[in-house]
Image (cartoon, rainbow, N blue to C red; front, top):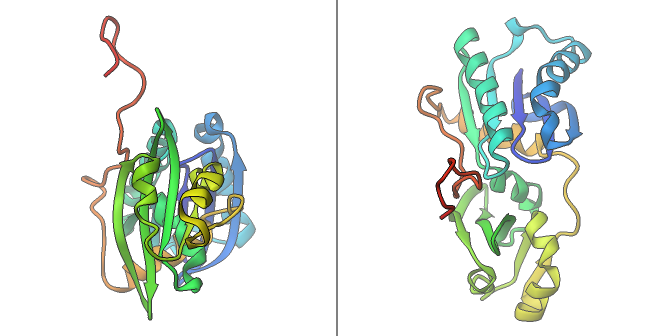
Length: 227
């Protein structure tokens, strides 16, 4: 059994899966509560599943982009558990988790997340046959940059896509499809994508695995001007 941890955004979640199939999921909302909520919710979900640590075979964790504090909470917890239990660990981009539930469409899938200052975190993926491919790796862009992706019919998803739905439809017309509303939990996608990598023998090193921030935090040192 595998455990997936996602505290990258305000909507956090945990999933317990078997070979990539999510069997138990629990989610909660509130970016300021992740530190207090993660471990009690993990213990609760493991008890509900009748799962002991001896039965856990791998850990998956969402890497962001997302909340700076939330990312540190989830990744620190996953690293600590991986070290303590000698478990393989794999990190998955949060934008990839947003797109994977739509993989069955066969369309290019572009996830967008607002990061402030008129900028967007963006990445694009597509299922080609049985292969899941990254078409555009995670990066920062503006609205104009996103519009250039729409040379062919594309499904945009994530909170940024919902916020920009009218802009995308105005600029791209029928080539832009927008998935309305956030998915209830990214746990199932985290389980499936983590298992894809694990079953190929891939592992991430807990000592070197880092969150995907894409931008600097908005806080600054005293006397230092924001950049």
